[in-house]
Length: 93
Image (tube, rainbow, N blue to C red; front, side):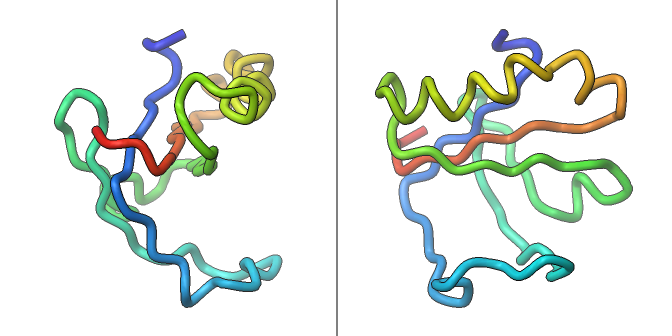
């Protein structure tokens, strides 16, 4: 599953601009996040690709497991569609 999902850990998330959440059709805000391998990801690095960016509370918790199961179950479909899946938590890298 690690090969199929690129999980990003984030030490601090600032969401003040989207405190109420994004509206349908809003552009995603730019971001710069480091993954568990030390690679950096930005919106620009995934330009032209479908990007699934999801947020979960903490690694190895019920919320994490519940959240990622949705993407795990559809991994083949998502990858066939050319989607990149990135998960963001408040955990350190």
